[in-house]
Image (cartoon, rainbow over all chains, first blue to last red):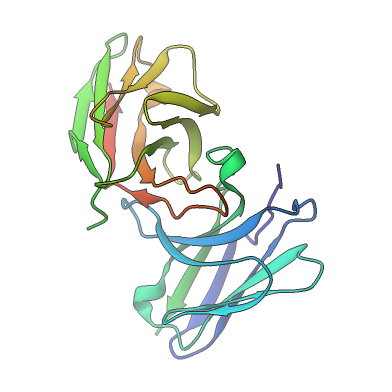
Length: 111
Length: 115
């Protein structure tokens, strides 16, 4: 089961681009990389998922290098409402549930 | 609104007591997950069910048990409660596709306070 490592916290300012990197050195061939966002006292919410290269949706981009040992969540032009905890999750449905959310990265966006 | 419902929203009880938390998954989702989140901690996976059967087990204490019923709702039973069991308990559901990693849809959580 792939163990993930993320920075504990990051600070940014409104309007900046934020990049949060997750390390997953022992990622398996079938594993996908999924990012979730959690606000205080709320359940996590799916942001984006990828397997390799780059994925983009309306809220974020996910960059995955060829070796897949890390991934970077990119949030363009953050606002105060992006202040939250961001979790990187690695796994697939054969080990679903055993993929751990870890401690996540607390992003604080300042005015 | 994720479509996952959890009841009750808040629960206050005493040490040594037993409580039951309830979760109704999104319509069509067969898999249910339970997580515990203590104050300022990450999410700790407890257990997963798929279509009534236990599929995966995480760091679930022996004092805790869960089940998924034929109508797919799930209950998490916590017994002999201790102060350290105070936490937010989240339920999530997913379809559980044959490939990939499903998006999990989380409920609003049940906040348990043990006094």
